[in-house]
Amino acid sequence: MATCRLGGINEREKEVHMAVLSNSTKGKVGLKVAGAAVRNPAATRLVAKAGAPVVKGGARLGKTAAKRKANRRMEDVGRTARTVGETIATYGPEAAQLFGWVEPPKRKRTAPRVLVGVVIGAATMFLLEPSAAGKERRAKVRGFLT
Image (cartoon, rainbow, N blue to C red; front, side, top):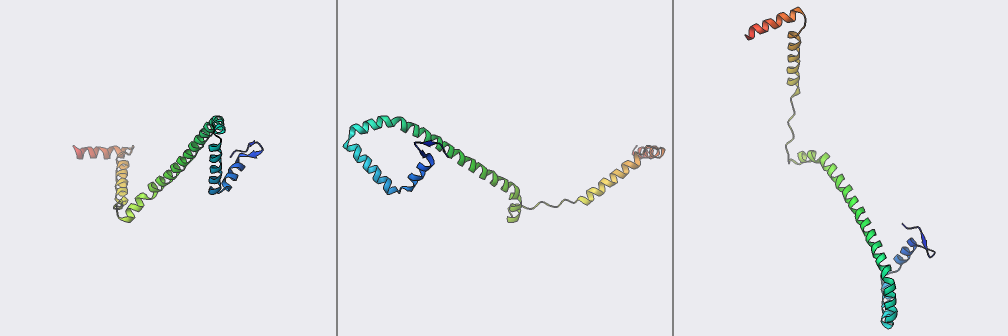
Protein backbone atom coordinates (compact mmCIF):
# COMPACT_ATOMS: atom_id res chain seq x y z
CA MET A 1 0.00 0.00 0.00
CA ALA A 2 1.07 3.63 0.39
CA THR A 3 4.34 4.02 2.20
CA CYS A 4 4.80 7.78 1.88
CA ARG A 5 4.57 9.77 5.09
CA LEU A 6 2.15 12.68 5.28
CA GLY A 7 2.27 14.73 8.44
CA GLY A 8 4.44 12.11 10.14
CA ILE A 9 1.78 9.37 9.95
CA ASN A 10 1.87 6.58 7.43
CA GLU A 11 -1.35 6.25 5.36
CA ARG A 12 -1.53 2.56 6.28
CA GLU A 13 -1.33 3.48 9.95
CA LYS A 14 -4.29 5.85 9.52
CA GLU A 15 -6.34 3.01 8.05
CA VAL A 16 -5.37 0.76 10.94
CA HIS A 17 -6.35 3.43 13.51
CA MET A 18 -9.75 3.87 11.86
CA ALA A 19 -10.24 0.12 11.78
CA VAL A 20 -9.52 -0.02 15.52
CA LEU A 21 -12.43 2.32 16.29
CA SER A 22 -15.69 0.49 16.80
CA ASN A 23 -18.78 1.41 14.84
CA SER A 24 -20.46 2.88 17.92
CA THR A 25 -17.45 5.15 18.56
CA LYS A 26 -17.50 6.30 14.95
CA GLY A 27 -21.23 7.01 15.31
CA LYS A 28 -20.67 9.09 18.48
CA VAL A 29 -17.97 11.14 16.75
CA GLY A 30 -20.35 11.73 13.84
CA LEU A 31 -23.08 12.91 16.21
CA LYS A 32 -20.69 15.33 17.94
CA VAL A 33 -19.59 16.76 14.59
CA ALA A 34 -23.21 17.12 13.47
CA GLY A 35 -24.10 18.88 16.75
CA ALA A 36 -21.21 21.30 16.33
CA ALA A 37 -22.34 21.98 12.77
CA VAL A 38 -25.85 22.82 13.94
CA ARG A 39 -24.55 25.18 16.66
CA ASN A 40 -22.19 27.01 14.32
CA PRO A 41 -23.53 27.07 10.73
CA ALA A 42 -21.00 29.66 9.49
CA ALA A 43 -18.10 27.34 10.35
CA THR A 44 -19.94 24.50 8.66
CA ARG A 45 -20.21 26.51 5.44
CA LEU A 46 -16.53 27.41 5.58
CA VAL A 47 -15.51 23.80 6.15
CA ALA A 48 -17.88 22.65 3.40
CA LYS A 49 -16.34 25.11 0.91
CA ALA A 50 -12.82 24.13 1.85
CA GLY A 51 -13.67 20.47 2.09
CA ALA A 52 -15.38 20.21 -1.30
CA PRO A 53 -12.13 19.86 -3.30
CA VAL A 54 -10.83 17.37 -0.76
CA VAL A 55 -14.02 15.34 -1.03
CA LYS A 56 -13.79 15.41 -4.82
CA GLY A 57 -10.23 14.16 -4.63
CA GLY A 58 -11.28 11.51 -2.17
CA ALA A 59 -14.13 10.47 -4.45
CA ARG A 60 -11.72 10.20 -7.37
CA LEU A 61 -9.32 8.19 -5.26
CA GLY A 62 -12.16 5.96 -4.08
CA LYS A 63 -13.37 5.54 -7.65
CA THR A 64 -9.87 4.51 -8.76
CA ALA A 65 -9.58 2.07 -5.87
CA ALA A 66 -13.02 0.64 -6.67
CA LYS A 67 -12.05 0.19 -10.32
CA ARG A 68 -8.84 -1.53 -9.29
CA LYS A 69 -10.73 -3.81 -6.92
CA ALA A 70 -13.32 -4.63 -9.61
CA ASN A 71 -10.57 -5.38 -12.15
CA ARG A 72 -8.85 -7.65 -9.65
CA ARG A 73 -12.11 -9.50 -9.04
CA MET A 74 -12.72 -9.85 -12.78
CA GLU A 75 -9.21 -11.29 -13.19
CA ASP A 76 -9.94 -13.77 -10.40
CA VAL A 77 -13.26 -14.71 -12.01
CA GLY A 78 -11.51 -15.09 -15.38
CA ARG A 79 -8.84 -17.36 -13.90
CA THR A 80 -11.48 -19.46 -12.16
CA ALA A 81 -13.60 -19.73 -15.32
CA ARG A 82 -10.53 -20.73 -17.35
CA THR A 83 -9.65 -23.43 -14.81
CA VAL A 84 -13.22 -24.75 -14.77
CA GLY A 85 -13.33 -24.76 -18.58
CA GLU A 86 -10.06 -26.67 -18.82
CA THR A 87 -11.27 -29.20 -16.25
CA ILE A 88 -14.56 -29.72 -18.11
CA ALA A 89 -12.74 -30.07 -21.43
CA THR A 90 -10.36 -32.62 -19.93
CA TYR A 91 -12.70 -34.72 -17.80
CA GLY A 92 -16.10 -33.93 -19.34
CA PRO A 93 -16.26 -36.71 -21.96
CA GLU A 94 -15.03 -39.29 -19.49
CA ALA A 95 -17.58 -38.18 -16.88
CA ALA A 96 -20.42 -38.22 -19.45
CA GLN A 97 -19.56 -41.82 -20.33
CA LEU A 98 -19.28 -42.74 -16.64
CA PHE A 99 -22.74 -41.31 -15.84
CA GLY A 100 -24.24 -42.99 -18.92
CA TRP A 101 -25.18 -39.77 -20.69
CA VAL A 102 -23.20 -40.79 -23.77
CA GLU A 103 -22.33 -44.23 -25.12
CA PRO A 104 -18.61 -44.96 -25.09
CA PRO A 105 -17.08 -45.17 -28.57
CA LYS A 106 -16.77 -48.62 -30.11
CA ARG A 107 -13.30 -50.07 -30.31
CA LYS A 108 -11.83 -49.91 -33.77
CA ARG A 109 -10.69 -53.21 -35.18
CA THR A 110 -7.18 -52.45 -36.36
CA ALA A 111 -5.90 -55.98 -37.09
CA PRO A 112 -7.95 -56.46 -40.32
CA ARG A 113 -6.92 -52.99 -41.51
CA VAL A 114 -3.26 -53.73 -40.94
CA LEU A 115 -3.59 -57.08 -42.71
CA VAL A 116 -5.23 -55.46 -45.75
CA GLY A 117 -2.44 -52.86 -45.86
CA VAL A 118 0.22 -55.56 -45.78
CA VAL A 119 -1.48 -57.50 -48.63
CA ILE A 120 -1.82 -54.38 -50.80
CA GLY A 121 1.81 -53.43 -50.15
CA ALA A 122 3.08 -56.91 -51.00
CA ALA A 123 1.02 -57.06 -54.21
CA THR A 124 2.30 -53.65 -55.26
CA MET A 125 5.91 -54.64 -54.66
CA PHE A 126 5.35 -57.93 -56.51
CA LEU A 127 3.90 -56.21 -59.58
CA LEU A 128 6.06 -53.09 -59.66
CA GLU A 129 9.39 -54.86 -59.39
CA PRO A 130 11.73 -53.09 -61.86
CA SER A 131 13.38 -56.26 -63.21
CA ALA A 132 12.26 -58.40 -66.16
CA ALA A 133 10.15 -60.60 -63.87
CA GLY A 134 8.09 -57.55 -62.83
CA LYS A 135 7.44 -56.66 -66.51
CA GLU A 136 6.20 -60.19 -67.22
CA ARG A 137 3.89 -60.13 -64.19
CA ARG A 138 2.41 -56.77 -65.22
CA ALA A 139 1.79 -58.11 -68.74
CA LYS A 140 -0.06 -61.14 -67.31
CA VAL A 141 -2.24 -58.88 -65.16
CA ARG A 142 -3.05 -56.70 -68.20
CA GLY A 143 -4.03 -59.85 -70.07
CA PHE A 144 -6.42 -60.84 -67.28
CA LEU A 145 -8.01 -57.41 -67.20
CA THR A 146 -8.55 -57.01 -70.97
